[in-house]
Image 1: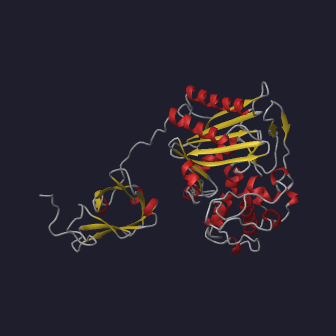
Image 2 (image 1 turned 180 degrees about the vertical axis):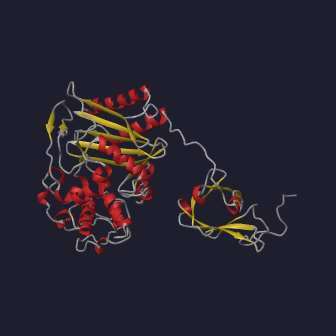
Image 3 (image 1 turned 60 degrees about the vertical axis):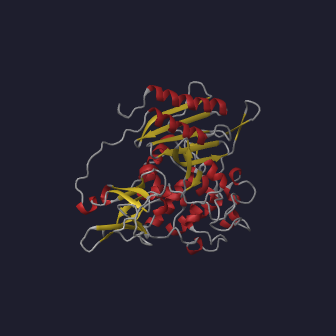
Length: 461
């Protein structure tokens, strides 16, 4: 139950209902169900259906297709965090003999392993998984279509390999590991590998007539880690909150932040579209807003989970038709509606409990050549450095505990920042990966590479 402070305004709720009503009507789908999460809690649920007097609630299962991949990625990252594997490891080191072993684990997570998009015929989504009992049946005779690590090429077999990797290293079926390590700790008791009542049936809607055809619901067998799961808006809302904030029972906030970080090379079309891929998560820049999550589809079903991390708003969209509503667009719209109508209220500003005087001495303007930057103190002894113009290289830096800092993002990610002091203890300059930042542009009293012209600054006479 939400408190009055958590509830959405009536106008916001109506706008959300209107958006999914349009999606259900124009997308010509039997049912359409959605939820919105804010502050880690579900604050709205809505449904539209072609059945009079009945609407699916937050406990009705739908098939979620490739959102399953995000769950599989969580299992792999748990293995990494435990030290069982490294993301840079080749698959061959842990799962030999697949024919795709040169791909790295990170590459499989980000779809840069060079593998084909689909398994060999017949189409795996509409045929029993028993037709592909072994990994060789999933991969085919030529599993690699592209050089490993060179391009993003979405691959369902790649996530089959990751599921097999989990099984090999855990010594248990993927389904059992998922239930034990993710579903139960997060309380996702309505997320299952096979449908459990109440659940929606999957339908194909004729493109030129208002008639429907039931779709088969096959057990995907080996392909399960790529798309097997059934879930509800209630469970996926809780999963969205986990992906935004982490949960130490499953993955830390730092690791889920890593999942949300771009990990795939972007092609020209991707740059134009503002889309890329992280570790088991799709990333897009839309309407001035950075969104992460995943879409899913299987015959008879479409699904989407979208998170606006900075806005602290997430949306879940589920429907039971093969094609029709553009669920990714609807999910993004639901996030936008709430974020624009009811912007996130920031936490109150509070001063630091204490501050090191030698650190405070570094705060303020610095110059790299003639480029002006501002160094600001952040929490836990960290700092940030950003151009005063608002354009150019910027980064946050983590304190290392020895008077130095390590860059966390952008051009300076991993680079070392340190304050260089004179023999009398005063600060001469900052050194950032060999770049010298001085208190004045080309300060003649600092160690500026190449020196400073002794005649100083001048005009044209």
